Structures are given as C-alpha cells and as structure tokens.
Figure 1: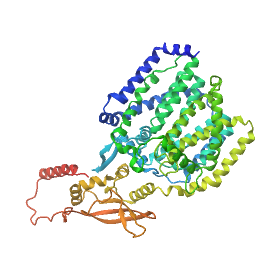
Figure 2: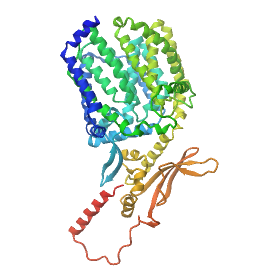
Figure 3: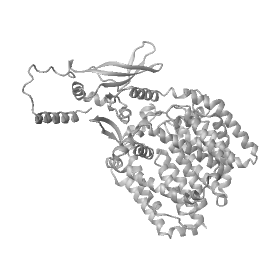
Figure 4: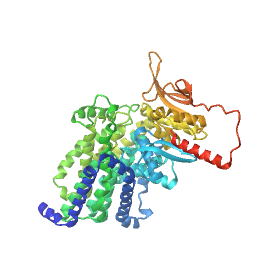
Length: 624
C-alpha cells in the first residue's frame, strides 16, 4: 500500500511543482541572496510577504468554516463553557498591570510594528524626532524577531490609530481565544469536563497572566500552536482542499511568531503526508503549492545571526562559547524543575499544573507508543495529537540544549509556555483511559482549589516579577512620559526605542556622545523644551559609592542636573537628569552668544524666509 501511494503521489504533476517551488524557496532563502542584501530585502518586502500570507490564511479559514458557521445557532452554543472561558480570561487579565514585561523583546516588536504602520517597512527604530508636528523615524535596524506579531499590532495601529497599548489589546484578545481553543481541545479529547479542566489549569498559571498583560509574542505563539494542532485534526477528518489550506497557512504563520516555532512544520508535513498516503492521492490547492515562496523572507531575516554576532546574546551569560549544545541539558533540566516546583514568591508557576503534567507525560508517551502501531485506524483527534507531540518534544529538547534555556530565569520563564501546553495536552489525552467521571471531576476540583488558594494570591502579589529590573525601569520611564505636559523634549537613553515608540524624540547615549556639538546646537536654539538623560547606577554596599552602568556615561562635557531618581532595587538607582550645559575643553558651547548692540537694518520678508529655510536645513542635519 505504501509503494502504491508513493507511485500515485509521484505521478501527480502538482506534487512535482510543489517540490520545485520548495527547492526554489530554499535556494533564494539560503544560497542566492548575499547577507547584506538579504537583510535589506526583509526591511522592504517583509511586511508584504506576511500580508499576502495573512490574507490567504483568512480566506482559507472562511472557506473551511463557512458551512459550520452558516448552520450555527445561538441556542446550540455551550454557554457554560463560554462563561468559564470568559471568567478565566478576566482572572488572567485582572491581577497584573498592563506593561512591557520582557523589554528587549517587547519594545523591539512594538518598534517594528510602528515602522510597519508608518511606512510598511520591517525596521525597528533607533532614532526619531518630532519635526514640526510630524514624528519621523531617522534611523532603524532590521530586528532578528519574526514578523507576524508586529504585523498584527501594526494592523491595530492602521485600524485604530498608533498607540503602544495596541500590543496589550492584541494579547488581551488572544487570551480569550487561547482559552477557548483549550476548551475545544479538551472537549474533543475527553469531553466537556476535560475542556473545563484545561481552562482552569491555564487560568491558574501566573506565567500566562504575566504574558497576557504584556506586549510580547508568547500568547500569539501559544494560540497558533494550538490552532495548528486543532486544524491538523480537522484536516485528518475532512481531507479536503479548504481544510488543508487552512492547516498549512496556520502553520506557515506559526513559524513566523517565534524563532523555534518553525519546528512545528515537521509534524505538519507528517500529517499532510499521512492523509495523502491513506488517500493514495495528493490533495493540493494553488495557495499551498506557492506557500514556500511566502516563507523566503524568514531565512533571509535569520541571516542577522550570521551578520551580527551579538544577536545570539552570548555576552549576557559569560562562560558559554556556543549557543546550542547537548552539554547544557543536565543543567537546564535542573533549572526547569526549580521553575515548575519553585515557591510562589520566586516563580510564576502552577504546582497543580506542574504535578499533573509530570504525572501525565510518562503515561502519554506509553499511549503514543501503543497507538503508533495502529495509527491508520485511530480517530482523527488521536492521530493529530500523537503526530503533533513530536513538535512539542523537539521544541523542549531544543530549549534544553540552549545556553540560556533556564526556565527559572526571569527572562526565560516565558519559553516554558509551550511545555505547559504540552503537559496539558498529555493530561487531556490520557483522561479517557481512566473511564471514570469521578476522576475528571476530582481533578477539576483540585485545579480550582489550586487556582484560588495559590495562583490568585501569587498573581495579585506578582513578587516574581520584581527581580527583573529592566521591566520595572520601563514602567517608571513610561510614568515619566505620562507626567509630561508635552512630548517636545529630547531623551538620551541607550534604550532609545522605548521613547521613539512613544513618539518622544530620542537618541542612544553612544550617539549623543559622538554628536555633542549637534545637541549643543539644539540647546542654544531651544529646539526642544528640555534635553533629558536616563542612566542606571549601581551602589556599592560597603562604600555606598555609585557607579554608572557601562554605556550610560556621557562624559564630563555634559553638565547634568538630577530631575528624578528611584531606587527600584536595593542596590540599583534609576535616574533621569536634565542636560544643563554642554562644554568643549571647559568652554560652554550650548549657550547662545550675546546679541550685537546694533540690530542693523530691518530685513525684508524674502530675507526672513531665506534665513528660516537655512536654519531648518541646518536643524535637520543636526538632529541628534
């Protein structure tokens, strides 16, 4: 049967066309385009590639679900499940304040969405200025992070106007969608009560609340993983062109959410081939045939890791020489266990979810081994979950081989979310084996007690987030912005993207030092209402000496006056200062020279206009 199916597939010209297009995409993405040109192409066409894939995805979803939606009636809806999903989403969004939690990811994503909104380019702004009422991005870079999340945020900007809070709006909506998909998955695998159990388990995960109220791409990643799994099950059941197209394009967009999510393309390909071999024919649509070309920008963007050695962030963890290695697995496993079973004050975990998941995974692996032998006769839900479990396993293995794959680290905790999803999937998949409703109800009661007794207090206190100083500093700087009557000031800060994304003129500290004379020009001419500097200082506990963070020192030529200071941690002070004066060799260069005693003859209107134009040209050249 296998050889007959293979012959039938290879006799289909569309299969050969798909293979040729896939080969062309590989050549274009990995071989034909030089590194610098690749990054430039991503900045110019990345938005449009994602837009085309997104439109085709929406079209495919409508084609596969339109018959079901036409037959839907409000009386047939499961209102109890909808209410449980709604309450779960409200709990997750209520106990933490909205803000940027993992700064480097979330602010860079917001910056890319800003460029996509303003000029449809995939750039993260580094310098920007308000020029006569219009905010203009002066300089930017192509970021290493995939483009689907900033693309969706940019659509919200397009529809409702540019606001940094649109990232929070997107994640709030995704929270309810994700819980709804969890409920659907549980109901599909083990019945209605299992769907409720899945929702309660995720509602009791403070880490999910932390990301639901943030501006990162973790919620989108989880939602797309689960949507791909559910559409994979639908593909196995329906075996038609609309379900295949929806399944493939969901996977294509999933691969553009997080770097490692491209792993899930493997189980997706296996599910497609599984149905093709069973049907002994290739079920294909033209969008799927050309889909590989819509992924070309992904490997082009990945060249950033070759061009910029700092993209791996190896400097953040001294002592490591390579980003991935099997040697890291034992250490990372230990850190994962510390996260899953750590104290509520230290880690945003769920003891109930961790314990049930750890128990369920070995039984699930036995179930997979057992059902692999009879996979051809298994129901669609079992086929989808069993094959998709390969993606969960590969992603977990990859993270355990990652030099920074420590789940108990404040920055890395979020990477454990797909593993949490895998544990819940494993639990829901093995529940039918017990065959007793009392087991399901007992687990639901345990999950609800864990939610009320441990998770809600943990989310309300959110003590686990206080150690991450960049996140607290970002909240403090945003409060400073909100307190200013007008945004017509200039901020010097190495995290300049934060200010630019809030439409505040900003430049990095390293640039300000090099362009000292230009900033002095603006001080002389009062171009900005004020020029501020953000700096972080570390306190020596023995001597009480304050030391500036590396890269924050403007040097002795900048005379600063402290405006605000906040001790966000015991030995860390965050400070915003005003630039009072700029000197060169001890001589002030930011002070306007005294006016001449005689004003001279009055200038004509044409002379005044010419002088104004010359000043504006000089002003544009000397923007910091």
